Image 1 (cartoon, one colour):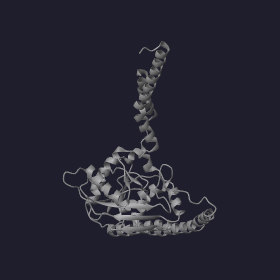
Image 2 (image 1 turned 60 degrees about the vertical axis):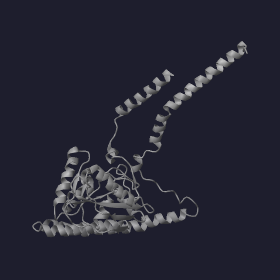
Image 3 (image 1 turned 135 degrees about the vertical axis):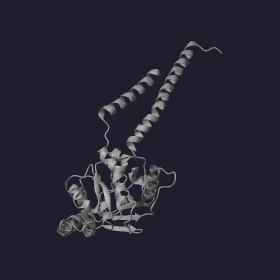
Image 4 (image 1 turned 120 degrees about the vertical axis):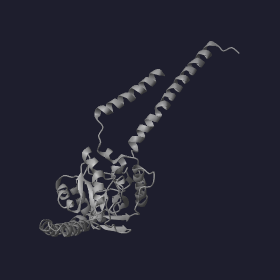
Length: 360
């Protein structure tokens, strides 16, 4: 059956419009994976989430609980904080008045001097924990001084070291810090075998493996503690462990630390807060509550690489502390992409989209 001319033109017009709409739809479908990936990276970035504090749900903004919250603020800042500050001041006075004479007067008796200094450092760390009203539960056998062993733990804050140090005088390899923390590192902490490095200097990072091997060989050295993540993570995740502690030929003793956020979030975001302000926040909270597990020592298995060994130990710690493992290097936290590099990537993406649209 023949169609008249108006019907044929109408049919062709509709077909052309439909084809044009299909081409546009196909173009959108072609670039949708890229857009989805970009949106997902912005909304659900598993890397940046590792270094962000997750605020608790608000509970005090109603007529019944707000007065109680105000009363709690008065108690924390008006009663607990002054009492805790007094404990800290008295602790520092006792510590310094004992540590300085021992450090300088017993230099000819290194064995006794090191033993007394260890006890004094443990005492000062206990004072710090008391200034937060710390409630710490330790699980498992306490570490002992043995050669060829290294202790590794997940890292949430510099107070991890204080909490572990109050029970055992660990020697720790730590990032160098400025200010009063750096002064303590160069004086008090060096007396128990601690040493520092700068993560921004390649030479310092290369020396870490050598320091680990040298310290682990000593019979009288304090147990060596390392935080292989290399940075503080928010106690919800664990990032990749650096392999330095796992290629030294030593027995690795995992330690898992988990903080209870019901009273305070112990995560230290060093980019946004100084350690002094971090301590003040802890001292004005209700309490610092955490669990510490000393886990079963691990050794390198046959045909297992140091990287695989590190991941196996990280898995043991993550499972015990209930943390999620993510495949990121923590040092990326301190890396910044140049503006030129970002503009080049944006230009390449824009050109690819425009070229595809021109072809259609």
